[in-house]
Image 1 (tube, rainbow, N blue to C red):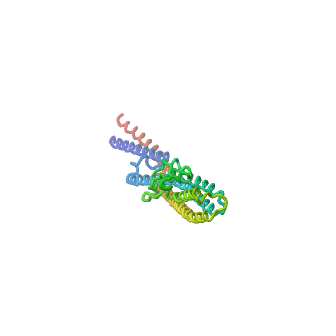
Image 2 (cartoon, rainbow, N blue to C red; image 1 turned 90 degrees about the horizontal axis):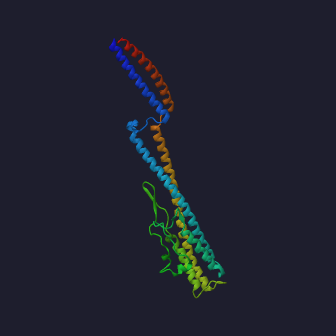
Length: 303
């Protein structure tokens, strides 16, 4: 009888401990919202959680980095618009019959184009190629262009190689053209106009002469070519914007999907946890009463 009572008391104690553990687990799930406090509690699915979290972090990092790239591309678009407008203004200027203000307008175009070619984003020159810490276009005046040797290309100090960035794990794109790629033709045209103005058939002042008209018509074709070069680069920048925008959308969708997937593995069913907690509390009370009763019976056997 004594042995049987002791065995029953031990079994009741085990039931009490098990019920307390279940109550603790259920309460912990209610507090944290997770099925387990750490990865050890997820057994075979732990590896899936680790891989999913790593992929999620990569997608979030790409989305964040690409958002900064988008901001830069928008700044570059403004620079291209300035360059395109400068080329347009110069082309319009050369169609005049009155040369009185040609050089004034050429000076305005030079100033506008110079500012665009040396535009910055977050402290870096956007047309510098892989060299972002130095002025890509170094001429301060039109006279600097005229004094450049052997030609205006000497005024461009950008790197030859374009800056690139990775927008997907397997996709790398050029961020931008260099200053020399988009600005050389326009600046060369400005230099030739200034040289002609200072030459024997200059200056441009009043009614355009026949020689001046012949020069302007020839130079007009060069300016149109410069304009086309700028606008092709601007279109490429717009294409990059769309490509990066699509990449951002893709990364955000992947990150959201992985968040939901991990939550499906980790997150506890709160209604189920609440029910189990109530049931476990009841089991604790019943087990405690049973153990208490059996303990008293067991103790009487020794009296």
